[in-house]
Length: 243
Length: 52
Image (tube, rainbow over all chains, first blue to last red; front, top):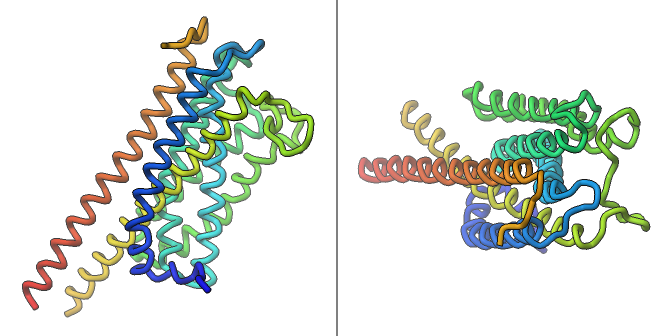
């Protein structure tokens, strides 16, 4: 029986991702291209939003990945704290730059859409504010990794920061459900019957979401491979210094 | 080929250019950093095997 824990072995992780990474990367390019080209060129204007509806094919997938990236970092951090697998700590570290870019895209596209639709670039809305705080947590997380020399100490402290920041990741997703005073609408996509988005938009949106998910996986795999090599380099240099 | 974006052409174009640009920069950074670290590690391991 194959266990996920076998990938805690850096050698096995490198061997597996050696063939897996190109497949995921090319799949990410293809799926994202299909989703965005479909969304941009072949969807009709919305009767109320006009052409700005095309921004959802960027905004929704990036915002979703911004939150999911943090949740992935949380799971990886917990694995590090409980089982002390280095690959999980390095995967969390590799996910942070991807998460921060996804958050930034979510903020930019949201503001660009909000200006013509809401009449403002920004509002003190619970969902928007918690998303901005999540962005700041990402920056803090990256800065903390960079500031601490010892990788195990850095992994410990960033894991704790990740646990704290999870509050804002969850708030970003669920704030719209329990705070009614916000400008941001509730979930447009739902598994519940009576869904509010037409399939003309939903199909390319789902494809874009899958594409962004694959981009995230590809970049995290590539980043983790780099972090494993960087860690090995540090260990070799330290060993030479001690000899 | 270009769809008619009407009076929102600037906003929609800006959103796509900024997002794709940021993703492009991120991919480039991940790739360049990966290449640099890989080269540095290879050099270090070659030096070690030469000295051994």
